Length: 147
Image 1: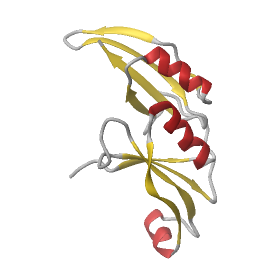
Image 2 (image 1 turned 90 degrees about the vertical axis):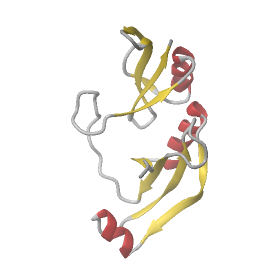
Image 3 (image 1 turned 45 degrees about the vertical axis):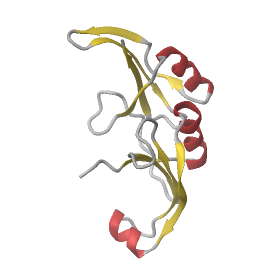
Image 4 (image 1 turned 120 degrees about the vertical axis):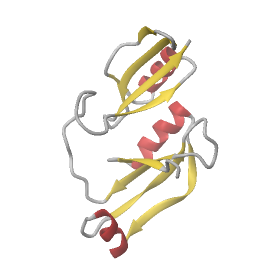
């Protein structure tokens, strides 16, 4: 058994995929998807589902590692903005070499701040530097590094 992917249902799959490629060096894993049909309706529990998008290879795991799947459904349902203490899935986390540099890059590429860069000594583990922010569509991302 192995972990396969995480999906983000995006308003604009191309813009959001580009953000993750620019900030985190993700790469598209072909083929691009353009999917619909009874089989998709059965699997998703939707009616007349149509979607398009890509799988992005995540950094640090090679071509066979888990992917970030970014799809835009023809019909989307909006929800309120998530916060870190909401139930369910709340954020993606990336380990980076330089939190402040990556945070600044993310903000120039369309991300928005949520928290502040913070440092905390974790006994027996080391010094954690991390921050939470939002991608261009409001999804929460944590970036962290350990010294």
